[in-house]
Amino acid sequence: MTGRLLLRGMLAGLVAALLSFGFLKLAGESSVDRAIAFETMVDEAKARLSGGEAAAKGQPAPAVLAEPELVSRTVQAGIGLLTGVIVYSTAFGGLFALAFALAFRRMADIGPRATSAVLAALGFVAVYAAPMLKYPANPPSVGLAETIGMRTSLYFALILLSLAVMIAVGMLRIRLLPRVGEWNAALIAAGVYIAMMTGIGLALPDVNEVPEEFPATVLWQFRIASLGGQVIMWATLGLLFGFLAERLIAPQSARA
Image (tube, rainbow, N blue to C red; front, side, top):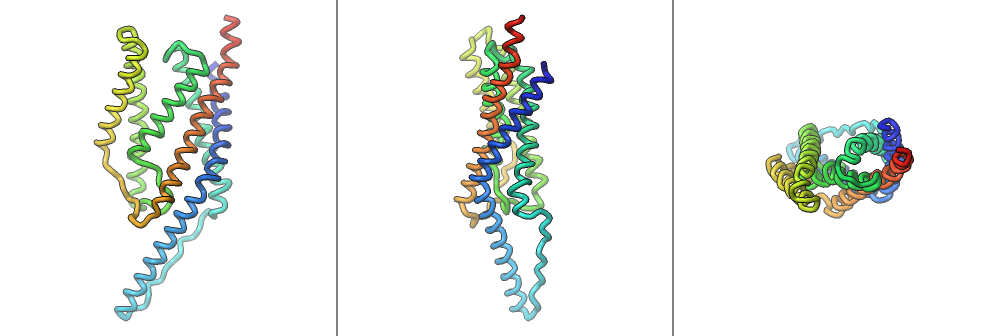
């Protein structure tokens, strides 16, 4: 059963990847191009400033060496983006299927479609929405090269903490069910999650490396595109996988 659910989860992830790629290609690539153009403009302005300072001192202008382009922008925006989205979404589809196999009939006495939809909503909150409030997505040219490692570590640490807190409050909800009922148990679990994530967010260091002159509209469009891609992925996983899982589980339940 778990193996067949895993295959269906990866299939749902593949479909989610294709839908997300289409959205990101239409809604996100323009903001990435504008961010790269901004970065190029800033580098040229710095080169002109350095040349002017050198000329004022009677020195030759420093040589500006262009970094080699390992992967062309066309490849990045096409096959590169598609490959990355497929790997990401398919992997999440498999993990989603495993989470469904653990949660079905244990999380609540609801059907496969409802379980899948609830898991997708919780996954979206834990994996993307909560970490994004602390460390939002930024386009190219935003952020210092020397802090990439630190920023990446903080972001993934926050995702792991968010998942751990989500699992913990889910177990808390199950324990509270016999005493306070489903509705109150869900409200208490949600409140505990919000309180704990607020504390974690305040404890982690802030990272704000967006240049003051960076266009606000480009930043906003990039983050909206990132949000839209995640919504499409998680919605597709929740709805499509629920449909596939129901077709697998229903006949077996009927025979039983």
